[in-house]
Length: 337
Length: 279
Image (cartoon, rainbow over all chains, first blue to last red; front, side, top):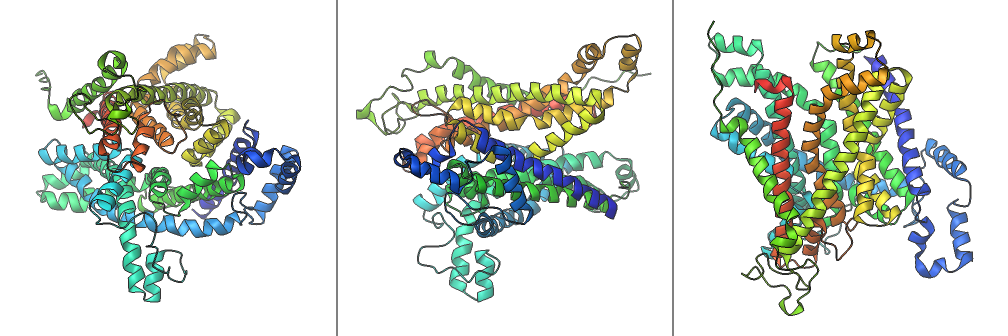
């Protein structure tokens, strides 16, 4: 098991290098000039400015050399400096990652328990009225364009009804709590600042709901499918045959085994959440990694794009590794050697 | 021996297929017939009628330039649906071929290809797509190219897995034993057998491609005005929050067409995957 985990971690290194190479090629080998995007029309008229910019960011060097310089700095844990803000990419990511984590965590907490519950109910009542309704709702959730949902919720609950606060993480008049975790709600709780806590929580509701609705639909669907597969197994038939109540068959025999495959789609859920995060954070002006990715892509800020891609890609790899190891732990039929 | 009775046609079993097909037709038909169905052109401005709510002359209302939203939704659906279809068509063909060849050949080529697939899968595709579009300059074609570059790995994986399972089967080994060339075995005997599963995945995938494509346009990385595109139309709502019809109708068009495609894809997958025939 330990050997397997180590092997997987080692195999992740070429994948991560592949990610840097891919981003590097995309941001450097494409026709649009980084200088043009970042300096603006006036400055590009001035050859001295352009030369200084190229030299500063190492763009005057041959491409393979630029890449090697980037990778060697990366090996020392330095993600480089953002062209757009002139600040360390590592520092900027350290600020935006907790904002996204906070949002995603709340969304998952809202989405997962009801998602599993409704998935189980839907499978247990397969073909019935409740199954039809639950499947209908989750189908709509899966077909929902995130950006449309986010915009409609913002318009309805903020602009029209005034029930929710506007975009951003805190109202303008609220001082952010001292940063410990970088998540405003937890930091406010740690500082005992109830005003900031309530405000931060209120700001979380709408964007978290948007992400939760999309994840909920996905979880319902996966749980239902997995549950249906388990309900067809012999041991479930045996449990029923010996006269156990439906509640016990489902809760004690089927659900436990059905949840194992549900864990394995965590990677897919993560990828979906990240895509949703880019749009949701942009619409709600949420200063997380999704909005950071969008703003750095719009200005071809390649150190920032590469840093963001690395962080998101590395998380994906680690998450999948954990899932595979967990899978081996809970399912004794699977052995890694 | 008694004959098994035929299963009655139950709505819960085939409802998805029916509803899906209807929804897809409801959108594909009018999108194709847009020039004949709409009284207005998508770029025709009637400034005196700007921001009119839905009326009998403008059933979906008008936008800030007095353009008919109904006409723009129909023309926009054309752009958005074609974008989704094109992305899936190209990347499914490319991915399938790559995965099938890789699984068929095996060895180091296979290993290298799977690593490459992993890189693209681990990569946050929307970020790569955004960077590519910015670098190429925003346009609907560039959005399509960017998406194609990141969209193929699931097909490569599915095709590879299917080919690995198929290539040990007797009829494939027989074809090889009879002296057929390898590529001929692949094309004549292997590819036709994985086609149905690929098709089912592709149908299910068009919806996802439509949503992502519209999302790129929403961010200003797709269609360029005045070209109508559903995602770009939705983004108007950020500036015009009171004119609900400007945002609601294009979004509903995306939602319902994707819903139809998903229903259709689900049913096709259930019909083509023998493991799923049970339920």
